[in-house]
Image 1: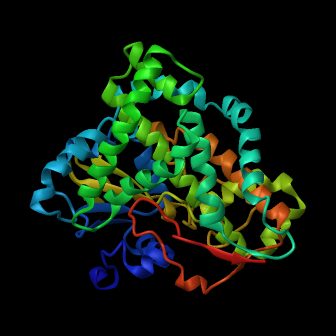
Image 2 (image 1 turned 60 degrees about the vertical axis):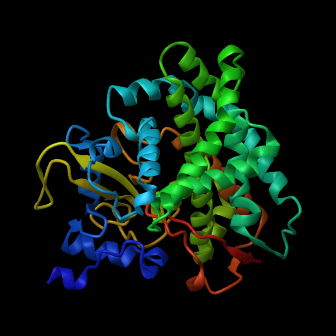
Image 3 (image 1 turned 180 degrees about the vertical axis):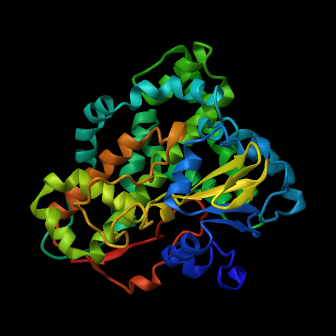
Length: 409
């Protein structure tokens, strides 16, 4: 029976380390599969994932608003009020809303996320930040922890700068935004940790918003504050989406750089190919996004009964589209298990799809391109400083990435 071969442990140690054999089994035997532990349908084939993301009339992003079932995995009874507070708070995120609210909130910030604006404002800044982070490393021989010494620092410096937050507060912001990701863990106290992070960050951000409402500046927080002043956004929506942009603006990019560097370490010939020809930079970054995507899933909830992949999904049932699996589907990609930085076309779904295609995709691409350009140009291929099979991965449903990545050259 299928149940004897496919288990529900999305966060098992082997699936955290290497989920791709598990996803391949699901694609082959049950591309639309009911996971009892997490009370959700798991969708793994490229075709079904793309279809689900592009049909919000069937699969809503308002999971927190529409799901009235108890939290899964279970939480302690004393945490239930914090659980409700957290869900109400995250219902202000535009990524958790359908039209028209999604469009209204996204429209308030969309103009400053276009490719030309992003490139003009950030290319030189990102290059300068990267140069400063790498300046003390000997290009001939040495060692670094790619996460601790580089990937963790670079994206938070960029997004916090854009939001207009003081430089001395950026480590504080990174720590709290990391704590917000506790929601994706299985621990029964996860909602206490998230509640603490939300309230602390709100207390920090609210006075900054108050300043920008009366005196806007040239930063992203001012764009949100102007949206409030013009009646497009409520204060709760400004606060919620500031925290969303802070998290999404650096946590995923950290893991793009970490996962991408690790993939190049495992394929030194590709590292050298990029070192010798940085005209491959755009294709290489897209391939690294596909090969080991930093975002694992996009959650949805069914708005009506619908048949998908031979299964009957009923109204009100949750759905988890697995981005990493779709990006390794052999029905969509030739030799999907191989890293090929010359791959073109590359229709990966690392940034989701449909109306919820990632707003920050242009900035993430730019940061990834400049990070991979700098590492491959300055250094020979990194080698693992410890057994790569013993690397610790974050125990999260949503984000894929290692805790640290010791390297030497």
